[in-house]
View (tube, rainbow, N blue to C red):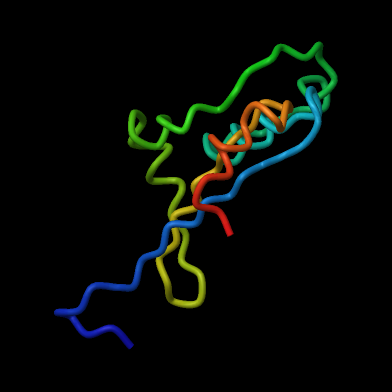
Length: 99
């Protein structure tokens, strides 16, 4: 139980989404982070290479606010990290400080 003068426990969770090129990693992340429905036609459209920028949580207040959920009484910010599909190039960038 949290008293009025106590701050609730907060955690940042880094979730790195990995997979081959053109499998929908960025669309999945954008759907969750931007609270948007992804239709079947959007999933089946031609792939345009993109990467979800980590800065989205810093730049867009609404994306940051949607990242917060309460899990077992703990405020958790789910920070979704995209990868390029080329794991040799982005391993050091995306996987840094992961366990």
